Image (cartoon, rainbow, N blue to C red; front, side):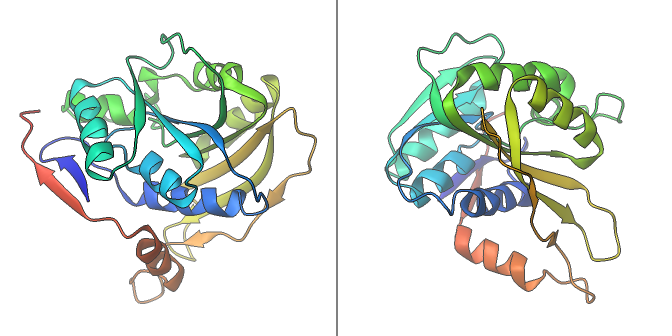
Length: 238
């Protein structure tokens, strides 16, 4: 069960797809343990899904907005999952430790696109609130020597993503693209990068959201079933 705001930013399909991609990226590892940091935790769903999958991980979450800090902690409590919440701007927080795993569904819409008037949603969606290079630079500093970074982003910014990851010694090992349907261009890219790695890049088969009948593809239905999330919207006066 996950509480979400009635009138604010809610988690969407991207979070479910990223969770599934994380399980694909980490499939080859048998002993997954250590500290996990979820950046921009929102309602807390991504971190909760990941530690549900890998019970030896220690959940840490970072969130800027007060209402989502409340939801992150509330949802951790009702799901019986201990968490440590770092409240504030990710770029400004002085963390007291490094992490073995960092995951994030960050604000990635480019600042040039038309924005909503809802300030809560603006902060959660647009990357002028967390510029890409500064985001990646901080992630690299927080990862331990062989730390793993798994995130999703606007596919149109992939060139910059690759440049910045390489600049800050994060090597891309796996990429997956999300397409609305088989005839449309990719809209989202999911990336698994490892610090100080020299592995060659692997591009796995794309995730197609809708089939020819405009219904969820079998793969997407399987992801939703695997995630098994149930959300409840609540009025938090956003």
